[in-house]
Image 1 (cartoon, rainbow, N blue to C red):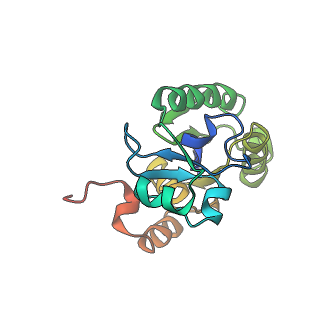
Image 2: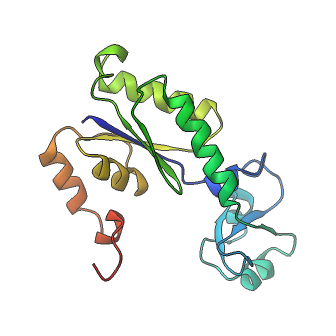
Length: 180
């Protein structure tokens, strides 16, 4: 358990200040023309809007829905700022675009009081910066990323536990192309 993945599921919406807490239904388009919903805030979800929904169908459910364009440059910049902030935990921080960071925390565990204390510090800090997050500490960077990306937070201690946790996930969770 030397690798910590920080997955930011709402990043495409979080790059728009106040979008998650807006009283208006907001969504981010999946493609440049916004023809499909990639992500939406709680108000939009409450009206039945879901990721993957066609823009026309989403607007039929919520006529006041605003579909924002995806802003990859802002997402990358936010990841960069968060990576710089994470240096307080380890100098080994890697971007895993479009939604994640991976930290090599092997040398840092004892400095922060162990795995649980380090994980709590990172989760609390990232939340304090205003990001929704899933943080997973695992023996490999790919394993930590795959599990965090599937919504599993916490500590996966040891390779046997990692194999078991990954076996319970679909192959698509590993990030391989469908053909592979």
